[in-house]
Figure 1 (cartoon, rainbow, N blue to C red):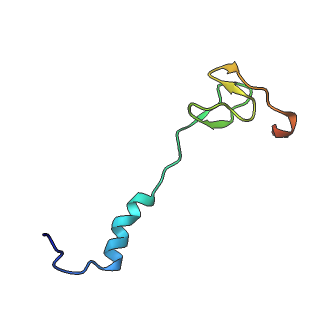
Figure 2 (tube, rainbow, N blue to C red):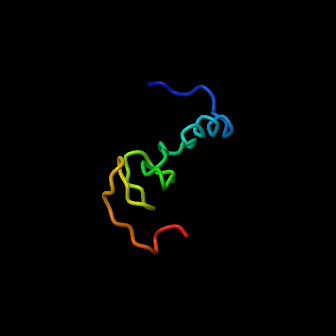
Length: 67
């Protein structure tokens, strides 16, 4: 059975583990509504105007819209 020959220091161990915590933002794209131009996650409905792929698919309440 394989056994480590020497103890791995905390700094070396943490350097190795730190790469997993470098998360990137999900793919952000501009809204398909030319009047909106908000950034939304790709494949999701715009919460500001309710557009998805250039079509209005959802009604948005007035209190949720930006002023």
